[in-house]
Image (cartoon, rainbow, N blue to C red; front, side, top):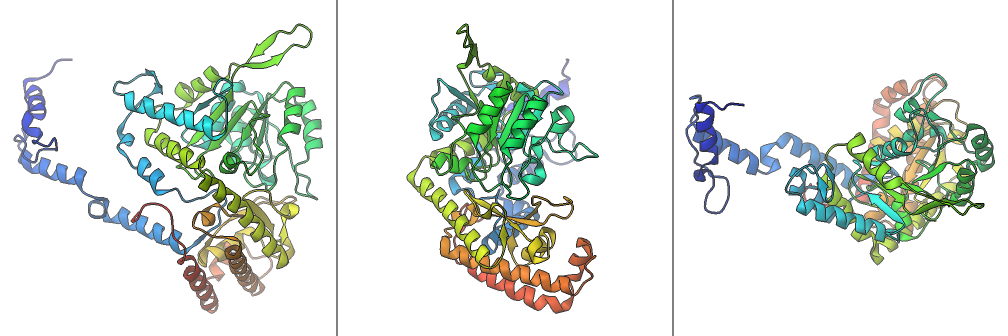
Length: 512
């Protein structure tokens, strides 16, 4: 490609020493703009100001939205089970210059130059990931490049299950995750169900516990290539040993999706999936309390030994999974996120983190006990982990209505289907989690107060419903909430909640 004389002069000007001052900063005086539209010095003065200016003055609109969200988090009660407060150190790593660096490939095998620092970082992150879960690097490897949990799961499917191969995961209405193959009778919803053949397993609607007997029977009929041991709204420990036996009987891989419980696993307060599973995927921002990203752990060594011949069948997961992540599904890794993961993993290996995770579980049990004492029905009767599912059918309301009233009163949670729900469009439950508020220092007695606030919100929900037709839609309910006669009680509860929440510190950066 030829370069014109004018282009050559512009390149020489840009590369000239006067662009850089004695300290190495961007120079404020630059050559004249060759197009003659504006003096080049003015353009570059404005440019230099733009790239060095802080957010509050550079983009007040975005800055103010972030400030409002910070205030919402500070004054509200975050009970969404998948949310947490990342530490200041994690957020500083996430906002670092690592955001600027492209590094397609893996350490020592990049498609870009200048990667010596990010290679060091990724290797450190991998080392810490294995250490955090007490894994032998001769028997386990880890990929820390997935952008989040959903891409991590799809990378595993891509690596281990051929197109239209068979997958079994917990059904979404029963507490599974969207990426585990969700579909309805009329439509395939998740890409997993579109590109692979999906057959869900379910809970026993009378108990809320996973029906392992039925899973075993169906697996014998379906012959899956992969069984997923993972949940999004299930309050009990999984029977990994039973699922291992089912997978082995059918020649299937066993994948644990521990996104929700990865912090609890690292702290040793819930059973670890690593003893029984071939692959373990996770997000890093839930109980692990890092930034939004994902990891995939995979076994190395021998997968099986033929009892007759003694011949060993090795695992070949490392190359399959790494190739599925890059170049299969992703481009360059998010190095700033890998830094955030590394920081979170270091914190996860501390005594303080183990104390925190034990408190998460204790707080969840306290919240469940308080709500049970107020007459609420908890699916499975309680919790072994960080979340509970409150079934509101016995109260005469549903999750969508209660969620909206609580949101108005500065309590954030999410509606969720309960076992036996007729329609996912009107879920009967509320999913409540304790990790975020525990990060703010809440203990058992504080969650008793939280339970009282929730109860008051649901009582208000029932009051509004009583003034409406039983056939009123959720949209009509939300519109009716705007009636003047409800504003006083809603505002009173909101103020009570915010006054209580404001007494607890919020982790993270001082301003944003």
